Amino acid sequence: MALGVAQQARIFEEALGRYLVGPQEAKWKDRTHAKIWHALKSTLEAKGVRVANERVSSLGPDLFTYEEAVPRLFEIKTAAGSSDYLKAIGQLIVYEKLLKRGFSKMIVVPKELPAAMKEILESLGIGVVTYQIKKGVPAFTGL
Image (tube, rainbow, N blue to C red; front, side, top):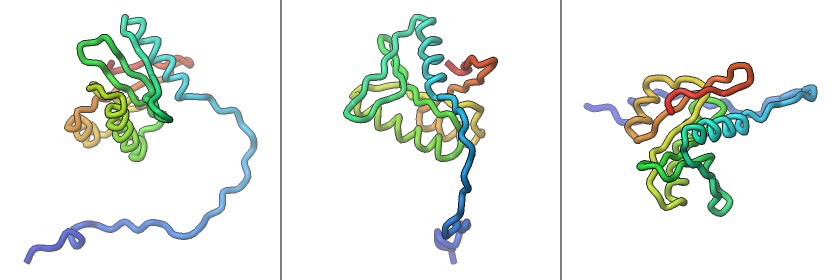
């Protein structure tokens, strides 16, 4: 007799209840997303690529190219956890629909993703661009 889906799946219990996060000292935070956005824009423009990021209603893609044979749509993430790439996938799909154009979709992340995730992204037609910040300047791989 075959096991049902629920019996085959492993269950990972979610934590319940509240927890306390104590007060923290004030600290300066860099606007990493903006730093990556400006660097990506400058890098593409230095290669002669025209870019934009027009808003549609209250939504707007991070950056997209135009006047290319296949325009690219970029979604920048400053972390590369599961929720980051899942959110990026959804954003890329929604932005492409809102802009009413076809794009080569790209996720921009700070580190290499696990092979399994890269495989999934590839199967969805989404490329990966990684960046490293060296001496305060982002450098990209995969453009």
